[in-house]
Each structure stands twice: as C-alpha cells, then as structure tokens.
Image (cartoon, rainbow, N blue to C red; front, side, top):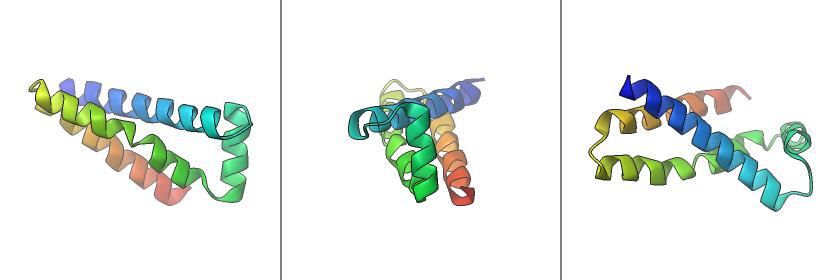
Length: 87
C-alpha cells in the first residue's frame, strides 16, 4: 500500500511542478501553456523539469525511513519517463 501512496505522491508532485513552471515562466494559463508546449514539442522537457521536485520528496522519505514509499516515487519517475518517450 505504501508503494501505491508513493506513486500517487510522485505523480501529484510532478503535476504541481509542471503547473508551477508554466505559471511562473510562461504568460499562459495552465491548459493553454500545455497545449502550446505540446505544439512546440517541449512538453517532455516540461514534464522532466516538473519531476525535479520528486528528488526532495524521495530523500525526505528516505530520511524518515519510508523506503517503500520512496520506491513508489521512483516508480512514478519511471512511469513519467515512459510517458515522456511517447509524447
């Protein structure tokens, strides 16, 4: 169950990172920014930048001895990598 929680935390953190990047560095709304970045072929790069927040979560979970949740974070990064390959 902790693996699933880690996966959900990882995906949610990545979505927050993507939202923050689009909100802070583009003049567009979230959905408009996603469409524009997909059209420009830069959506995979934005997904990668959004995943950077997972590194802090990962090390925080390791510090609190939540190894199974940390494995879920790694699983979410692998899942996002596969998604990025096909976008």
